Image (cartoon, rainbow, N blue to C red; front, side, top):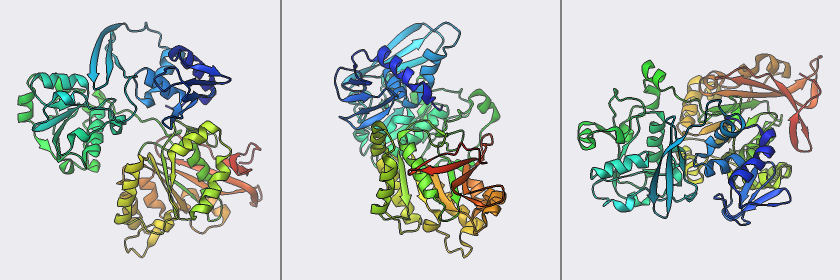
Length: 513
């Protein structure tokens, strides 16, 4: 859910006062020891709701601190805070009816169950990274280790003399767990019967690829109720004997999955929060940004990427949270790229600059085409740096047509290339060029003016077209760019005109359209 940045200062004061009593106010900045709120000076929170821990180089916004205090996942913080403290639901707050404690190695978390059937976790004492697996020291680690989703399931299976463990925090933070105790072990993943369970299973598979000696999953029966998990199984040993096991590579390909309407009605798949709203950039989506040569599209997009890396709005477009960005570019050698970055970087606040230093990564000028070997290298970079968004600039310099003489205008070759890029499984921004056309023709043809337009329409979830702005007589307006949007999964967005001022791009409010 996109955040309303105008409310952040008020929310910051409320959250700091309500949840972090040990924090001390120095001028307009709060200081405390860490995200857990003890007294100290290491972590600083600005009045506009951005924080940085100088001891760990971690950072984020005020809603991340709130989520940590409430035992939530990072991305749940804003919505939970708004519903709980800003626009609370009219019904009475549910009563706490049960507290269950789970002891990890070195800390404890609490599962809170409420009268309305909801639950939450208090995991404020947990380390941010290298978290231990749950009850791994209690297990002999002989034979197959069962990985389930949730401490309740581990306790249940271990009560049946089965070797089981789990990670803390769900699918979105699986990479914060230390999985090395499963080195060279055979692992069976027993997921929950819902979309979140499938996401957790895939995340664990990715973490265990180079650790476990073998990883298998369960082919769950189709008649199980939604959200069913291992703790709901009356006879888990018999269930495992009766249920087929799959190797990840033998699972049905993503494009061939089948969903029954009855399952979708019973358990609707959640719509993910936008990265750039509304629906301009979505998780695992592909955004193409195109324009004619020498217009300045890379300069515009560099400001966008820096904004993405610190969670700052860009040209009146909301960015939900800071993202880890890999800028794979094939235009500038590093001294000239950094010169361009430095000029834009100075316009951001110190807290935003600190987030950029953590989250923005770039390559020197790429000379290789994106064939299989290069894509494997890119995949390694994505995994190593935990990248959220891959940016390719420009497509024409790295495009692999696979021997097709049609090049970028070959629909088949472009589809094969985009399919290969999509297989990386990461949100992608592709910076591309238009066919040689007069400015007026670009305004008329819009996205049909892109090279390989048909294939791009099939694979891309959204598009941004940058063309020279024109006056009423069709003359180019110097220093102005007209920005058009093509949104596949949302409502149409009006075009806008942007202008460059002191190495920054901003929306032109003069009324040109």
